[in-house]
Image (cartoon, rainbow, N blue to C red; front, side, top):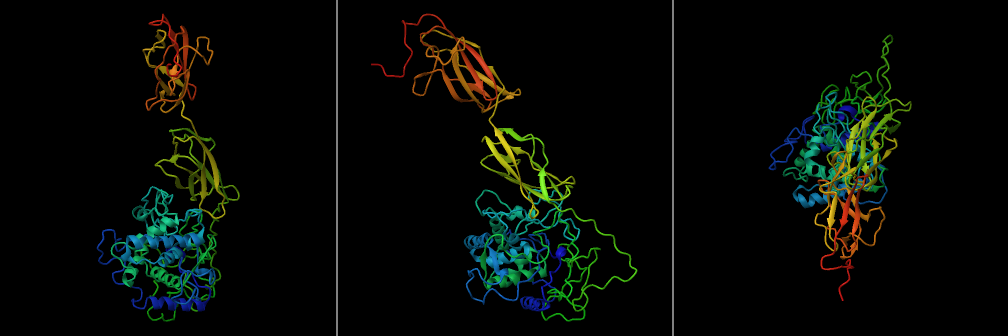
Length: 603
């Protein structure tokens, strides 16, 4: 990840020198610029060990700022300190809980790995600044998606899309996703459901931390052994500088840390993967290069100076790092810049040199607004004809492209996006519009919310109401005669069946009612044909009927009392389908007059 954001300079030259010494101590056993023997590979016994040149992040950019000089506490002190000490030592509560939960889980599933949660904290720090300082909801999901730059080969590795944009919202190239910055192909293999919500979400810190733990513990690694620890870290991002940075934070956190409220964690200095900007451009903005007056970056070589013993020499400004990224920040003109001796500012442009044209200002998203016009409505079991859509615009109302937008279903509903998803991530197009996948209605009727969240700080969410209505049938057709006859005191020989349709297609699971009335339409009746209720007593109205999977409505048996004449059976479905059938009772009762059953036992 160092390709885009370069090596972050420390606040003072003194800090730089000591930090460089710390790295030198950690790397003393290594040749300058060389990777540890067997790093990233070696002989592993398990099939799930990542290949030697693998990378969980696709070697995406990362924060390279190092810890402060003042350590949280002396070695050997408890790691559960009160909320005091340097701010950098504080880890947001939910993020810290996720790391510790992952450590406990691996202690059960892979006890021989000896994974410490401080290693997860170190990786989480350099990958996303502990989920943007703990900007997560109560369930551990980031308030907005954390996306690294597009891995399109422009300053980074070139990784064509592997997930059809499911995780990173990009159907052309991959991007690292979430607080632990997994690329989609790696997440597809290693993703976990650690919070038990039935989903593997790379933007959930519990899921991501457990996935990272399993990835680091791949094969037969024992992280208490330095060589295995180095291999594990390098398999996450195959770079010596990355290894040194993570190890430095690892040692820092092992000396003590404390819990801070979510959202109050300290973000590393400089632009990082947690804030790639609206278009996630791989080129750094002007001003992200070396700070005038600051000392050299830890690990970098100052012209005219000798590197510290055991300190790996940094590649030159134009030397590519593993994964295809360049090692230094770019100037606005695109060329690498090397600070002059002494860490001073850049040499002024010689007189007469023509000024470079100003780069057009990148639009900044100020709000998202509803893009679709029609309401989001569907019948139970059907597809929504409209799709949720929003437009990202700047302060002047101009569209902004390339903004990742998360669409999420919120509320008591069994409706899902295509593929059974509760949320999808979609980038805005050239018109600034992001359109969600099609919604598939479940059987639960009522209203719910489709929430759109842009992956941009301080942009309000946009909620749209969606409604699932009851299944309907607009027509009922008799599957037999429309006039039935019975003698008094007997049952009607034929059973009533009808087919319900909606727009000429079979209408399954549609609610229906059946009412027996007089020929003139009067209801309810106290005599004439009847159904038997659950207790055997006569009833002339049935509710709660439902058509079957083929749209067929079947009525129970109908009986005639001693009352003769013509009666009407009226059927109605939700949605307006109706059918009327004549019920005729004619003739004399067999064996003499009989009374309508009452449901009471005979005396």
